[in-house]
Amino acid sequence: MDLTLLLLSIASMVTAIVTIVLLVVVLRRLGRHRRELAVLKAAAQRHEAREQGQHGAETAETAEKDDSEGRGADDGSLRRVAIVLNPSKFSETDSFRRKVTDVVERIEGAETVFYETTIDDPGKGQTEQAVADGADLVMAAGGDGTVRLVASVLAGTDTRMGIIPAGTGNLLARNVEIPLEDPAAAMVAALTGHDHQVDVGWLRVGDSAAAARSAERQIFLVIAGFGADAEMIGYTDPEMKKRIGWIAYIFGGIRTVLGRSVDVVVQLPDESRHAHKARTVLLGNVGKLPGGFVLMPDATIDNGRLEVVVAGWRGAAGFSQVAAQVMNPKLIPKYGPKLSTMERYLTTGIRVITTKPQPVQLDGDTDVEATHLIATVDPGVLRLRVPEGTGGTKG
Image 1 (cartoon, rainbow, N blue to C red):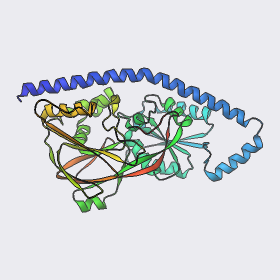
Image 2 (tube, rainbow, N blue to C red; image 1 turned 120 degrees about the vertical axis):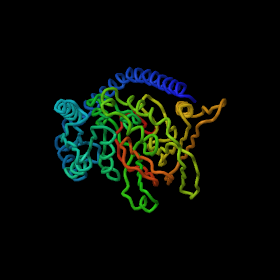
Image 3 (spheres, helix red, strand yellow; image 1 turned 45 degrees about the vertical axis):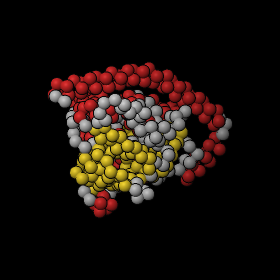
Image 4 (cartoon, one colour; image 1 turned 60 degrees about the horizontal axis):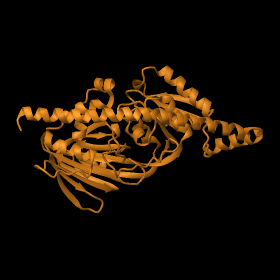
């Protein structure tokens, strides 16, 4: 393939993807307003029902309050809502604070406390402090990185977690249908929603099997992996992400198209081993991408499994075959040379070994390079607030 043909292939592929993406975005935004109206209506009905139930029962209310303080409000009521806020994701933090506080006061009548993240501590310490201060609900206000660090503290506890999405991908929020681009609506959805026990993934990496086994495990809630996907994230311009959002990843991904596959060995819990030539290995806890694309149809947030995609390709033509299979998993090239491979596994854990160090990413945060990955899933350990009417199961 000469240079001109290669550039034309890449340009046509990018144009097609961007066109489809923009169409999906427009359609999704039209439906967002209908969902927000339904959420606000549900909030008003809940508030009215609470006032009617409390009328003439001051003594019972006092006893219930005293009891909830001892039980941590296990009856579903909230006394303290903590907001772990990444200020870099909001242009006007004062306005954000006022809107969220007003929503909490009007709907729940609870106290709202804010904990701002810093460069040195991007969310973990703030979440620990919020729990120590007695928060019944901890909201992660930021991107997928903030969500991931808040969840790393709350996984395995009874403290509820909610999300106010404000990042580029907002992948977990998309997968459980939390309102995007509207902090007040996201806060309403958390207060009027229901608890859903969801899975989390854990990843350990290293430059040898022993190093990976002894490494500190790191949480992921959406997709972890290494190879081309981590390269794409690393290549994406931060300023472009601020201007055009997740579409910037498409342009960052162009540079990954021409890379070479490496030898990869996948080991499953039954000790079976599978050899592949791959450009990327993806470990999915959920599978829906921005724009409505479903990369991993069997990756659901509460099935106790990870869906693993091992993909390899040669050049732009091979990548276009992989992209076609992402849009339609049943679409396998019938004509012309087969320039790509894609294998899928549904598993409770996996070990991945490569012959050459590859960059690693967890929910969009690039980490280090590694040759050995060990991934497991922890079923139902995170108590996540999802919007009423959302199953919260499909990826």
